[in-house]
Image 1 (tube, helix red, strand yellow):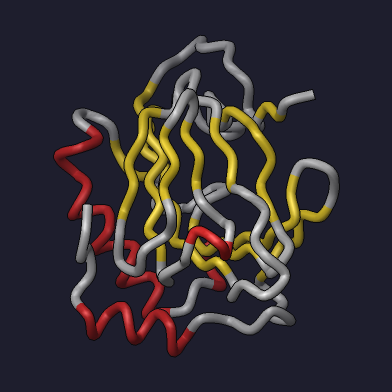
Image 2: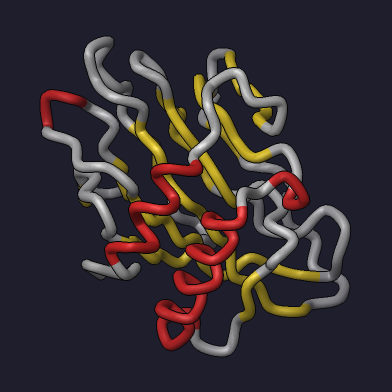
Amino acid sequence: MYNVLPAAVLRSVSASWPSVDWNGWHRYKGFTADKYGLLHVSLLPEACREAIRLLAISVADMVEDSFIDYDLHAAGLHQIPPGGFLGRHQDAEKHPLRPWVRTHSIILFLDNFQKEDGGSLVLEPDILITPEANMAVVFQTPNTWHYVQKTAETAPMRRTLALFAWTESCGFEGATAARFEA
């Protein structure tokens, strides 16, 4: 999906995007990832909150009977620094606190990247998506292996808004955390 957000909203998100030293970031740095994620929904800048609301509305038909988690558990703001990456993994299947099963992952890119910048989203077996500003990608989460290519040391920060869609399911025994390739 292209041109998901009005241009003014996209500009507001960029203008209010937190700096790398913001206390609202959780830093993932290890062999599975080098990235930042939103620590808690209460810290979300207002412009980003509005963008997430509009993103959810724009993808509603694509997530069928699922619903969006507005508490943004493991979703919200994400950024990958120059040289950063997100390793090959499958997303969590089950919410760790609620009787929910994840159905879809939704990513909105905030910036344009060139192939030489790296940072492409790879959905296996063979879909490579180079980030384009204001483009959303929606994919079914179950059994989908994916990763983000390492960004070049000279690349800009790779910034995204992320949402997850869920259904209710009592008794489902899936993983409550992402499963990374060994």
